[in-house]
Length: 76
Image 1 (cartoon, rainbow, N blue to C red):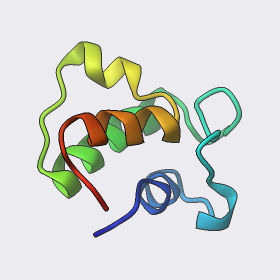
Image 2: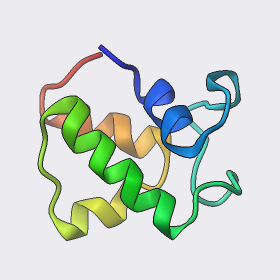
Image 3: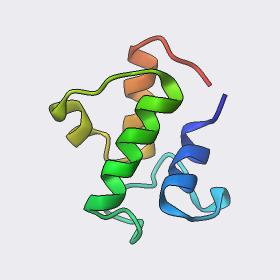
Image 4: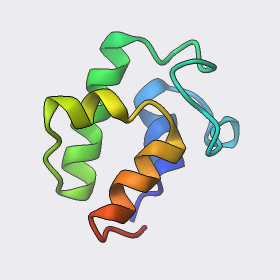
């Protein structure tokens, strides 16, 4: 299964080695609004989840993505 770090790297076209739990829309220049939509679509298709609009707005860091997935019983 694809890790959240790998998914974020793929969604934003950066090296996986650049992505950590602290990677967020505040410190990754590629993480813009269009990229965020791409990320949400990737999360939903990769992990088989459906995010509400509020949830989609809350996944603004790798750590937040991991917490959301863990809360849904999803591991990678």
